[in-house]
Image 1 (cartoon, rainbow, N blue to C red):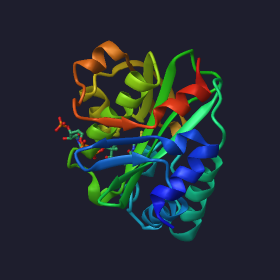
Image 2: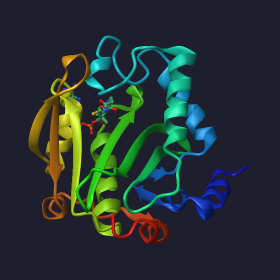
Image 3: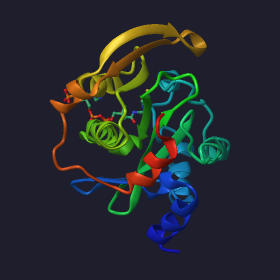
Image 4: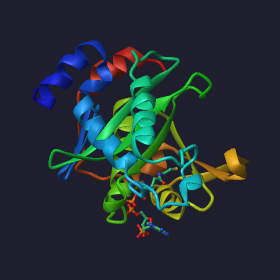
Amino acid sequence: MDPGLLRDDLAALYPQFGVRVAHAGLVLAGPTDVELLELAAIVGEPGGVVEPGREHELLGWPEETGDAAARRFLEYTWGLREAPTAPRWRAPLAVLEGGRALGLVILAHEHDDPAGTVRTSSWLARAEQGRGLGRRVRLMLLELAFAHLGAVRAVTAAAEGNAASRRVSERCGYRETHRGTGVHGVVEVHSAVTPGVWRRRRLHDVVVDGAGPLLEAIRPF
Ligand SMILES: CC(C)(COP(=O)(O)OP(=O)(O)OC[C@H]1O[C@@H](n2cnc3c(N)ncnc32)[C@H](O)[C@@H]1OP(=O)(O)O)[C@@H](O)C(=O)NCCC(=O)NCCS
């Protein structure tokens, strides 16, 4: 089935599937199962996302590979599929280039988050890292969050040793808010950005479609 048509059908029930964010050939869209299987194959491949031995730098990322890792990824991502409401909503979005799934990002608001706050998390296939996609994708997410969903603050967390993730946040204007200790004693660096700071770093040619029904479902989050 055509992925666009499938997304339209899903969007009639789950409005997060109707959101599409595009910038210079890169597209973020709710992942179909076909795309999730492509991503699961990357997750299952040894070193597909993170250099072996550095898994602890991805907060909560399991060390297993192969089918077990693929299944765990699928089950986690399927678990994010739920009708969005103001107190809690999750929008997982596949990173697509030329129809190929390269990674996954999640924009979300959880029960205990302050009003108007969104969280982001992201990963890209290792083969695609280091060519500026991480920064572009984050700015695309912030465009959706700040300019279309009315968020007033975006937060993220990265392991202290995750230089790429922390640099992406820094370049998008995030400032460190606090540190904590997570599983395996990993130091987590938390940071936040507001619309005023993001606006000075905004990518001007991001096109966001289909955010209205999601906004309708989550307002006021
Ligand atoms: C984190 C991630 C999304 C960043 O995306 P990316 O496409 O690799 O990053 P970019 O190419 O946009 O690079 C962003 C900046 O980080 C810098 N950077 C990248 N890798 C780096 C490294 N290993 N050490 C230091 N700086 C690094 C780049 O030079 C760039 O800085 P610059 O703009 O000043 O030149 C990606 O690396 C990834 O998926 N990593 C594995 C999963 C992960 O760690 N996710 C985050 C969990 S919190």
